[in-house]
Length: 188
Image (cartoon, helix red, strand yellow):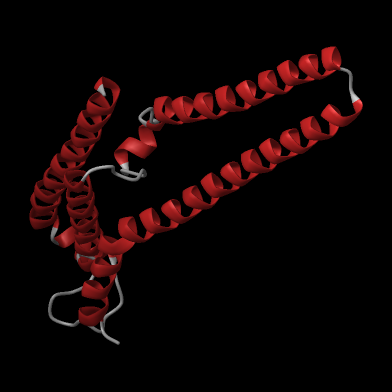
């Protein structure tokens, strides 16, 4: 397999990376959500069965106290679930520097996905361009060498800066799209 066949394949795989990662994240988030729901259902069933058993063996006063206690526990369970949801929403948009620079998060909008994909395609092009600049233009089977890179710096630097500016633009647009999404979700 020659370098001419590998470069487009790598660019395509890098472009599909965010889609694959989003799919994996959705699967794991959905599984965690199902586990939480299942645990909550089991706790509710337990408290119902326990309360029913206590009705048979407890006095009326004791049973009323137990009902209040179970109601408090169920309220705590609900508050815990609400707090978990709100904490997740609050921390979702707080990202560190590296996550922002590399767009290492899952976008929530279609425009976010488009900007992510274009960013990764541009970034993969820059990487392939830099790698290709270590190869001679007349012999594609030659080994990479610094001498080829240094000889072509007058072409490499402007091209690198041009595509880096494009990648930076896509990165900024993706972050802006994410900020707008969180502003809309906070309003609603």
